[in-house]
Length: 335
Image 1 (cartoon, helix red, strand yellow):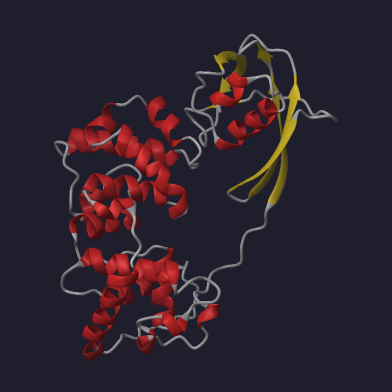
Image 2 (cartoon, rainbow, N blue to C red):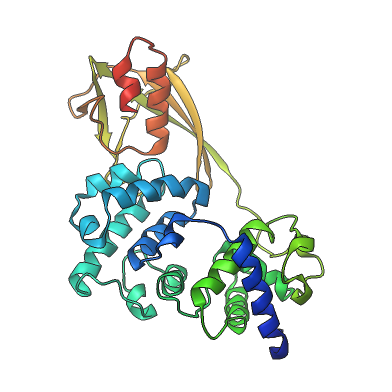
């Protein structure tokens, strides 16, 4: 499909309207207060598949614990995963840790500004590289997250699937046509905030949109076009809880998803579980059931006051179990 460009004579007016709106309505985010390359790098890793509201407290704690790239690179992986605990998708934490080490080893501790060098860092794909270039280095490059994809698809009334190669190519060309000559950071931030606050998924607030006069969308509620959601598979996962005094027993996760984390050992189904927890991961809906059992020789004991990094579902179900014992302050304090 041919990219229908906004006429060049309208582009300065588009930028002016967007800039004025952003000046008054842009979001106040902690990584924007001082958009150093390191702060942007951390925020972009955290924001992958996670909401801004969820990321903010983690980002603030992270910057206190690892204030610069050298501090992060020198930290043990277990410390990194422990601080990430609860944010999910732990491969992001491992890749961020490896990226920091790569910056020290390959770039003398300075995060690079050019896209190919950024792409060479672990965990940095096309979007993250563009986001760092724009937000940290003020470069005028197309930044295409879910919010900006939605804004661009509606501006150009693109009614094809945006997840195909043709769709991705269209969005990149269309977003490139909207770029200003300067102030890439402000432009990308404004488009992103427009998508997050007004040009929302479902029912956009077109009347309040500062650039609605430039928008070609005929039915904005139906855009962007995406494939149907995958079928959700329901599974049961039984785990064992065993405790001796102030110690509980865990095993190191054998799988790639939770590598480096500790989990409850496999357990047997029970008609009267100690606790149950339902959670979603990718295309699965998991019912986590806990049965009481005796510890096995290959399980590792951990004090409730010094638990290792654990994935959120296992940590949350432990909290449920320990909350049933009101005379057990050690468990509640640990979790």
